[in-house]
Length: 309
Image 1: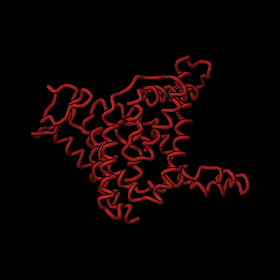
Image 2 (image 1 turned 30 degrees about the vertical axis):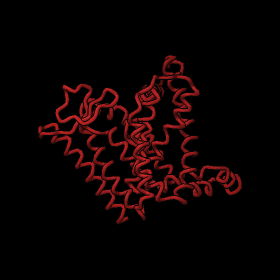
Image 3 (image 1 turned 45 degrees about the vertical axis):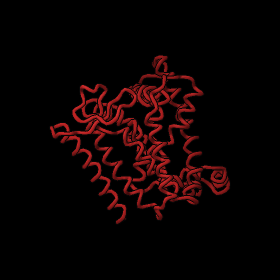
Image 4 (image 1 turned 120 degrees about the vertical axis):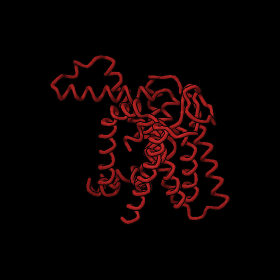
């Protein structure tokens, strides 16, 4: 989930759905409320830890934090050198994950199909928004944290894509994370905080504000979603199918900034970006198609594993 959240257009919530723990994730985060702190005060940490599914959340968040830092350089490398192939892998995973979610809808009637269409329109709206201007205002950064965390709890609405639209993707997910990473390395190497430059300190403060906003947003979104899933599961799953379907364009591997560079038939131009589909097989198209099939196959295997478990 940490790796997926770093890629614009890919939602960490999709990973939770693919691996079969989405509803447990929402339930666990929704339990952070005044009642949980009352349990902590009256019955102690052990009861509080069990109430919030602490072991599950601790392992999950530890994995997210580790991958959040470790994938920063790795994802940058793959997106720079093998962008089409890595997007193809996620495209295949996302397309097949739609099949998994459709199975969770017990009655695919006209009413639920209308919510799927609604979700598609919302997903397309987020996808079509042009990147905004970078802003370092602390209040705006806090707001970025609150809304971008929706990518973790709403599969198909990418938190990274929301940050791109708000203009703060590079500031908060690249520059600030790298500044914190290098600062931690410097501390481990024996250097004091006084050796940090002013820019690094500012970036770390902004990252902490962003994290605070993300924490608040995560609890609020989870609380609302948990109630909605219990009462209106078919509607929520229908909307998720739509969100995910509408976001496929974000990871479509056959894109180009110049039409002359397109190696297939053009079918869409959006935000000065050309989308096309391959009309002949060459080495690049074969590797992209292989990546898509690999992504779909991975989701299929994971789905089979979850059924057995």
